[in-house]
Amino acid sequence: MTLELESVIKLIIAVVVGGLIGLERESVRRPAGFRTHILVCVASALIMDMNLLVAKEFVNSDPMRLGAQVISGMGFLGAGTILKEGATVSGLTTAAGLWAVACLGLVIGAGYYLLAVFAALLMLLTLKTFSQLERKYTGRKKPPKA
Image (cartoon, rainbow, N blue to C red; front, side, top):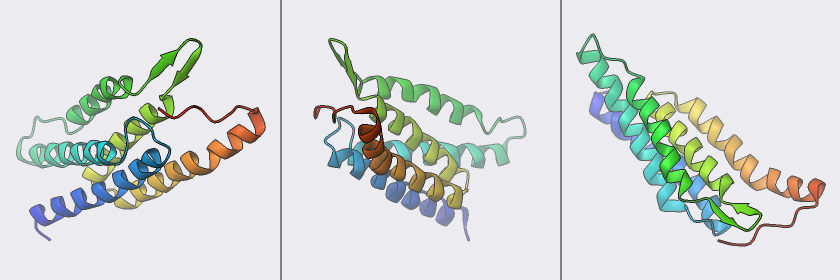
């Protein structure tokens, strides 16, 4: 398989995985939804893929450097989804989801597809099922739609 074809496959996987997480967020009307999660995942996969390709070309390149910058940069995007009204804070799960989708993109870009798909399934399980358990056992009401 050529490097370009492998890169295209990575980006397609990133669209699917990021899209699945984004659809869940979109279905509960969160500020960052389908397209945002896809863009974050694809961009992260692209950065990691290019980072690894460059590391093969240049001996003194650190293949994790750009990945680390993606993760810290996600704080700015995530902060835009967090809202505070009085004592209530909402959007933390969406912010964490964006950060996690960036991590998925980095994992896909590094070529660990099975790990990324398994992690995405765990994230979907957490977002869909665990929120119901959380409400049931903590007595918290569903947060208002953003």
